[in-house]
Length: 331
Image (cartoon, rainbow, N blue to C red; front, top):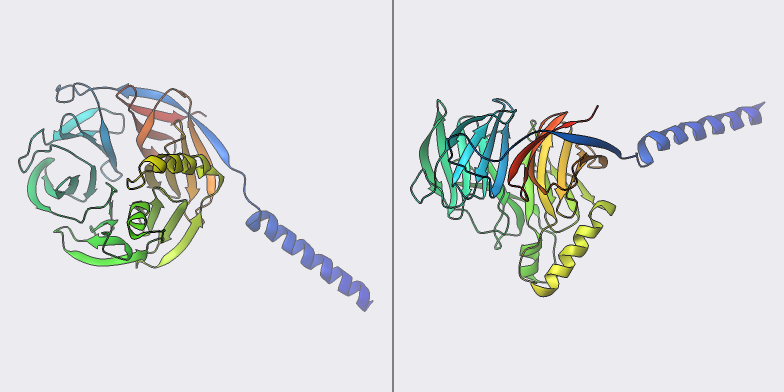
């Protein structure tokens, strides 16, 4: 009797562990979503942007439902609604306080707008939609032109080559608040600096996701800057790493990147790799495991910067045709 009970207990334990393996340990399948174009635009009605030549960044304000588009040729930031209807613009070509000769990246917090220019970060206060120039503060050079805005309104960006830390936190006035995160060591100090270019984004709870631009890693930090997860990427970046290695043979002291776009929308982290033109990879926010792939039906599109408007729609810039493109998932 006791022997039968023991065998039954062992079988129950085996079944329990089997269920745990199936649902939690075994790699989950990666689904694929097809998106189709629903609207495209190539200029603005006021002719400030006669055609989109080079959109350097897209920023989506999920509260106001506004899309901020920085255009290099026009030297301005154009604002659209979620249906790509033009609303207004900020700035123009030039070197004045409220002008731009080059825009690397834009970010927003409440009524504050931050613009990454070659000389540093320009900040503006938006009053009834109109920008009021506040200041320009310098940040250490790093071969990465992006930043994230924390839930407190601070800027999170790569630290300088002199720091052992990976990221730096600045307040809205340009004061350095803290450094955090460890760089991934390479053969030389210069190579460590170049290889640790990252693209940070922040979720609504203040967690910080860090995507390395030329190394196969994603990290997630807490709001208190503690490392929660570090994931080593696998098959999805193999070809991109091969391209980087080939480029570095000719230019070993230049930053090369396999990442062309990063976006967070709960509960996923979205990443587009430069060698996968019509595809965006979708990662789970809790595990950083690949869960889905978004494929743009028109494979001829040169998808670069993108933002996710909702669970069923996104907007990207097509550099090949000079167009902003809105897509929606095929039901």
